[in-house]
Image (cartoon, rainbow, N blue to C red; front, side, top):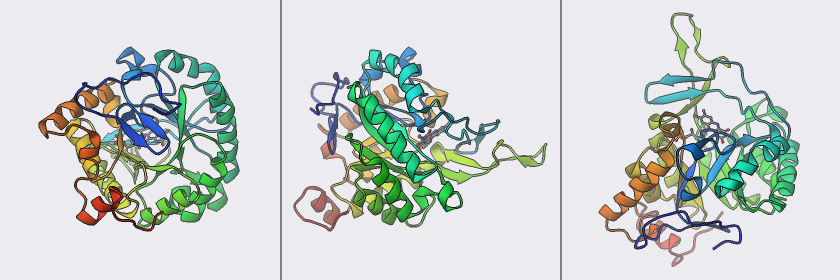
Length: 336
Ligand SMILES: Cc1cc2nc3c(=O)[nH]c(=O)nc-3n(C[C@H](O)[C@H](O)[C@H](O)COP(=O)(O)O)c2cc1C
């Protein structure tokens, strides 16, 4: 168990759901997805937050940030669009107002950080380092690089290997396991992932939302206040599966967290078979706040149906033989 592991997260005794994400060990592979479980312990009213692998909090910047104008969410075919715009209280405000209730819940907390400049990633990480020093609840960082880079004409960090590497390197001073959360809106995903890993990320979270647009036909204008938004939910699932599949093939030994359109055990299993070591549940939670716990229970039943006794038996099992051999460590590939 990692020194930062916390109290046990459920699971039946005969099914070993433990997942190892580099330096981070979790009792099971189901987490919340950033931005869909609030900043704190909001979901504790619906299920035991310590029962899932980890709670990922909504992305935080170094300073408070107001986010985008309303409307911020909109249902679309196959899911939803959001343009929340990363509204948040900043790392210090979050630690003061939200962290205590999360600590009391027993949850393992993954803190998502973002910035608009490379320096802001460094500032956010440095503030979090101080918070984590006195809070064993904080077990890891997820770096949301799927946000606009003001130093590059607002192009997304995650659309550029160089900018991604710079953001990761700036935050990497923090002594917590660090996962880079990447965008699916690039044909260079594997190159961006490689840059993140070379800059010091311990693993990858795949993926953030797809860029999309909804039109309000009555008003003849975009339905969201910011114009475009991020597409999530079932429509994203195949895209995220492919991202995980390709990155697993490229990096057989790197921890990967899969996220996109997971709402039940089969979806989680598909993500694990593609190569994910853990999964996150996002949009499904907005419709059913117990979704992460329900996905975990459903995954246990699904694994039992498949005759699996451990996660290791299914992770990457949809990959080709060469990748499986590389994952098992019997054959080496150049990585990252
Ligand atoms: C309302 C909303 C807010 C989100 N906020 C964040 C965020 O703050 N940081 C982040 O990295 N991703 C954010 N996301 C993206 C999710 O974490 C996730 O990557 C994406 O929604 C795909 O998973 P899903 O299909 O299960 O929702 C947000 C998604 C939604 C729907």
